[in-house]
Image 1 (spheres, helix red, strand yellow):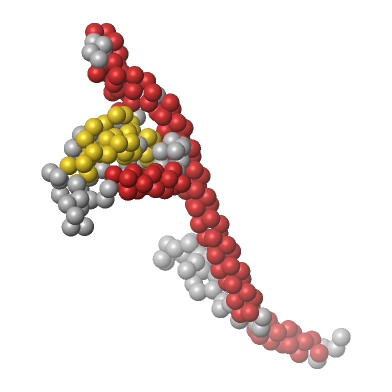
Image 2 (cartoon, one colour):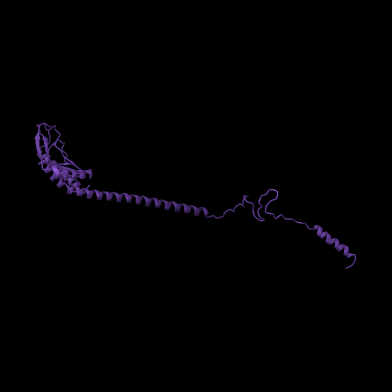
Length: 244
């Protein structure tokens, strides 16, 4: 190397050193001025808004969403229909169960009516007294609590759906359209609105005074009674205690 080149080369090297920048990076995690924790280099500070999401360019997203909503509505309708059908089924089963129970109870009460008839006859003859009467009263109370109700008394207006007239008497002391019970041969019984047995009675009819406004004749009344009894039996009243 020549002596002329030496100083020039040194000057070039000095110029290169002067052109370089000295970069000082503060890597302290806590800011000495504010005392706040700094976010690591390359990370976004907490609370800063993130980059906006890129829009989804799916042309079939709306149609897929509509399809899913339609399926949800269809499944919801199916669930509501099944729930309603099950509720109706439960009500029908409960109603049938209650009907079977009421029919069975009515049958038991019907079988005990002959016992009550014997007690009535014993009372009429004066034989129902002492311990026997106490037992009879207790039995009557139990049957009453189970819904058994006797009916049929002298002076009541005759009802062909509830009474069975086996004998007719005539009188002129009644209003033209009234037929009343003059005697009860056998009491009737019902359980709630279910007729277990009609009352067997003797009725009194108004004598026809010839004006045509009087009550029907005993023969006609008996015929009407038979017709009413046939209608009642056809409807199930009294013929079968288990029917309603």
